[in-house]
Image 1 (cartoon, one colour):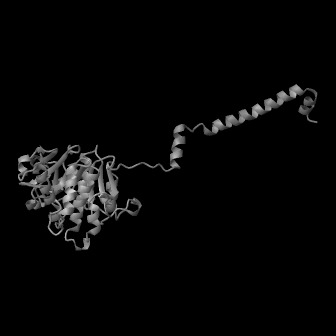
Image 2 (cartoon, helix red, strand yellow):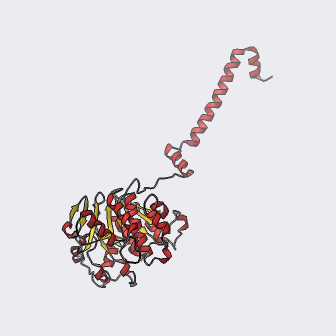
Image 3 (cartoon, helix red, strand yellow):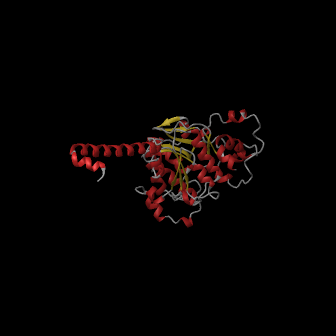
Length: 349
């Protein structure tokens, strides 16, 4: 028999102690080996390993809970135009504390369907930290408003200005449901927008308002008035009837006046009526001014002085979209605005 077993036969107590010692020795050896193997591991490394093997879902902002600056594209295009890109980038750049929402009818919410280089523009916009690109679901947007019935009945194939009247409907619905600021995709922001907590409309010209830049609180009664008039007075064959004409006639009704100019840069029943220099410093009759070559020399002081009281420049895309000359290097006003206020977009031109 083995020596240990002989001892165990003679001395039971000593045998028990030997067994305990051997067991403790084995446990100690295992513990030392474990420490050696994992000594380089730390909670930080373990946490990183966990997150590398698990997908983390981050909840995106939504205008229902986090109102911001809203843009809308009502065509089925899956890529924004150069001007729309500049408008969104400049708004995000000038307002880093605000969420900028871009609602796109042609976007289904799945970025994997937008691969480079065909869709580099939308991917570039989505990389801006305070820009959120969202699908434009018209049935959902118009639900529980009078616009829902209008949308079901209207035959868009017979509409002369469908993309535009649809945009007019979307902006008042968005402002009614969520509140915040709406800007057209042809407005380049030059300054921080300090009006996001105020209701405002901007004058376009003498006794005439425009709806390219609007701001209202959630469920504002003026927005509801606009929705009602939009449906009851609908006429898509007249350019502007559902847009600036509607805003003008509703503001006159709201302020109980035929002379809107008496309220310029003043408040009328909770709505600020801004002068045209805020967003329309160049009238639509002179839209070519933005494209005139050679207006921007090395000294940009003259441009800064001319637009010193302007928050954003409206480029009048309905008239100017036929202008096909390259912007980059033209030394035009638009060349200046792109290079200074949307440099990412400018680099992609």
